[in-house]
Image (cartoon, rainbow, N blue to C red; front, side, top):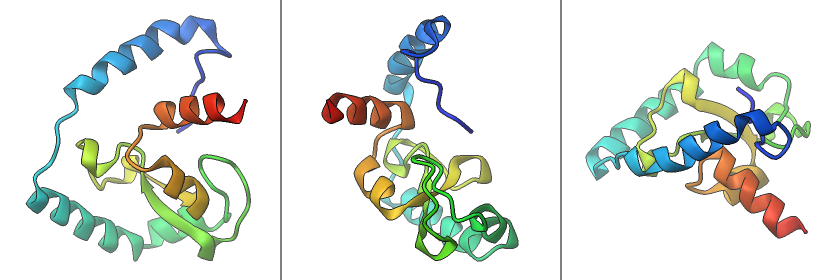
Length: 118
């Protein structure tokens, strides 16, 4: 899944605004639910699906090739924001991107990066 920057594609501005407002609808998970989702993520990390996903060694966010062993599992919608440990929500990310993204959604994180890089 790729992120579409509203600054590059003006036709997606409405979508960006919609996503920004939709954040208020994300539910938070209880500690028990978060623990269960982390357990699911650990199981998925051992699957052939995850090994294939990491085989290129490429970070989903920055696109750098860091090697399969240096990739971490990232929840695009973080568990703290109501995300789940499903194949559609998990991507390989380099440690630098995963650490700096924290509990942000991808578009929030890219917006944060663009504001702080200038």
